[in-house]
Image 1: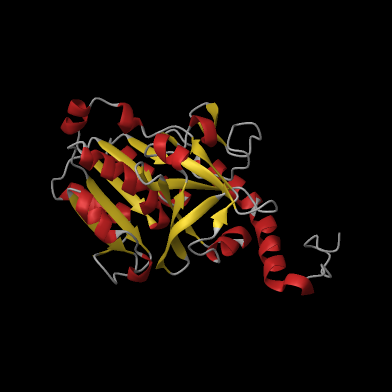
Image 2: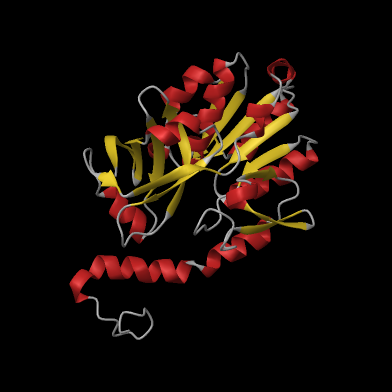
Length: 295
């Protein structure tokens, strides 16, 4: 069992947990992910590592309540445990393997959208600890949904916060902020974008115009996390890749985002049925004939 030693609500439907998992904490690197499972009947949920403490043996995860399984996770408190906490999975950020002195010469910008701030944070923190400066653009729909702002301020050379509604920071999206910075004379030769697929798609369209190489962290549906099931397959350039073993980071200018988003839509009906069953509990009988509850 993997006990939760800290639980914090960061924003509406967004939660942070520190989980005691010494073996994972000992070896994980920025960019990698874990798969958690609450109990024997629980769904396997992939979550990117937000932070880790090797001495304390803890791994920090951040999740947003979007379906039945994450709704159940929301109910876990300090002292509760996950039955499974598998990782580290996937490949670490390419930055980890690069020469530090070469990294220091790069002008790096991160663009984080919504909960994508969580996987951006460990990479920026790692760079900061190694003396590498970078800029961070982080945004959300509104001020109330921003997360980890204070933490990011401590590790980013420059932090630019945006909100779609203008309730905090720059009024606009991350792409708008990047355009503004470039028009002001800022130059970047490397971009890492992490967030909703539609956001990463439009970041990549912009950075392609600006001739800025861009890496994205893909978050398609995953099942086993070992490349066996094929659920997380993507088309990158003219090759089929699996996000769980080949990624989750890829060259954003080569990813077929339209195909990836269509694949995500396939699972929405199933998730909706699961949420309905969770909400209705024992009263759920499947009388509609559509949700499978009558089987």
